Image 1 (cartoon, rainbow, N blue to C red):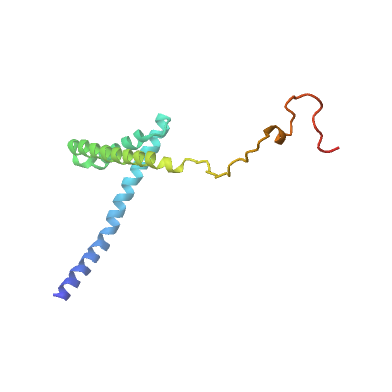
Image 2: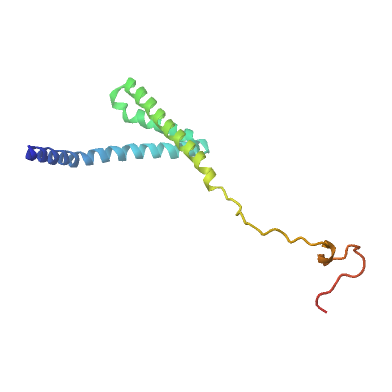
Length: 139
């Protein structure tokens, strides 16, 4: 029984290894189309916002389903736009939630209480009357 299990595991690893180039190539095509669409929309619209990614996701889904007919194009485009819309929404929500943690905060310094004196005017170096020449500390 143990040997059979090892054979299945080895077969699974071999299957993953044989499919990896196909999956990687598909991801590369998807990524290339999406980024080309996103950059094109930024250039055409003149602004960089979430709508570019959503529209690029929809266009990518539609382009990749082009050989399967109009109904598949519409469904894949809708799913591409919806998935990218969800991703952009979650990203915006997380950005908003974490933005408070990056705001600068003034340091809290615990200062000792100011000394109280019975004659506050004596501690003031400027005369209360304001008259006369200012004091010169260095003569």
